Length: 570
Image (cartoon, rainbow, N blue to C red; front, top):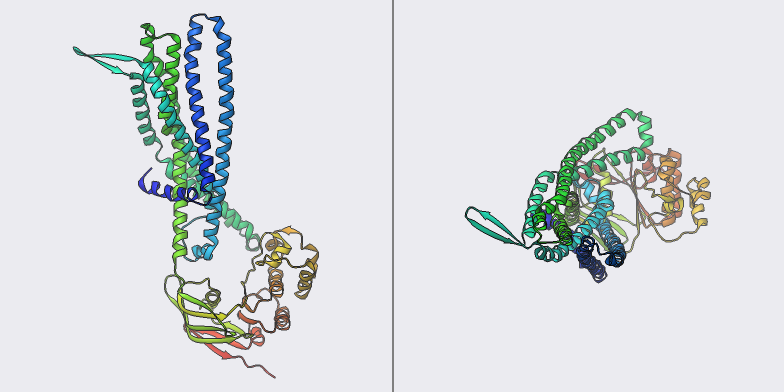
């Protein structure tokens, strides 16, 4: 791994192991490591068994045959039990680590409306949902698999290197008139074999890192495009946009297939190399040890033990070769998660230039407020504006002047600009966008969102009847995609029912009645006046009929908010 990847890995890795769960995590990891060490010890015992067993075969020692088979059976059964629990405890650690990381990232993504800021800032983070749901899982699984595997192979190397050194004896090599003696030559050959193999596998497979990174991105883009069609199916159907959407599908899927072909070709080359490397490792130690066997320096048992020990050492030294595909995948995951983490940190670090304060005065006040676009261009400004509790204000102006952004600034989710927004201390607020958000789940949950406190079905049925949706009352327990089932007009009336349930002190309506006819719009505003006479209402809209339902007009014109009283006929 390159230095940036190592830094990125450490930043992702260290959090869990220094968290409140660190001792539980370290205990599980220690247990997994101990079990793997015991497995290595058992492999050494089995390696010794090879010598005894094949020596007995060579000597036709029938009396030793069944006792040796019994010894192997006991060692094998113990090895199986320990291997199973080593994997089980590692999976337990994987679940705990993934749970911690997922909760941590969800908290950071949701805290301070970072999820919203990432979109406003047009961050190049693609598919945050996939980063949290899939990449964290891959990071944890691959890291533990490679970490435990590397520790096991290092232990194996340490144990069998000694065995192989002792079994190798000395090899005398004549060079000219001189002879050189190489002690433990089989060990040095295994080092040379694995070292050359590791260098070559990196040259063959290094392009897999970028290919794996791109494959995840293209797959996510393709899936997200289909999700967009599902969420906007009615609009697409009205437009008869099937051909355009299909073309979009094909373009994104073409990227998936093109990159996958590249991944296949590079993986094919890597598999050729890895399989060739593995097959050569079978015959290589036999060829190297055969001269000592035929010279009578070692018996058949010693030959088989040497071959087995060489295989264990070579496996340990070849861990990088065998795991290269996983390492390449982990590198791609680290890049994606590190990028996502950096974008979250950048979005969270953007200072809120618009100050929000609470005050004992029962009024909404804007003081020296300047609202700008993210790139710095100013939308509008107001030096001082006061709206007393219970005000009915209508925000007007041409499209694009920043009417909705004014509500965002008052809500505290818009960060570009300066000035102060002061709200009455302890006042509750509710903002309704043009397209109400209806979460998946029961209609009861959609109606009471974002509140989590229990509300009686009787009260819910009452407010549904008030907004003209009495037929939905029997379906409060039904679970469905309500944004698909209900028309936009019904969704907007459901949002007004939320207002009646939550009973906020300040209500902000952004084109919240755009899908309703004018009589229904007037009826809903009158309902709010009757049910919540002390609540302030600030609306954004274009209809001229809205003037009769408000007392004050806040017109955004020439980058300035102009306030005036709306005259009403007696």
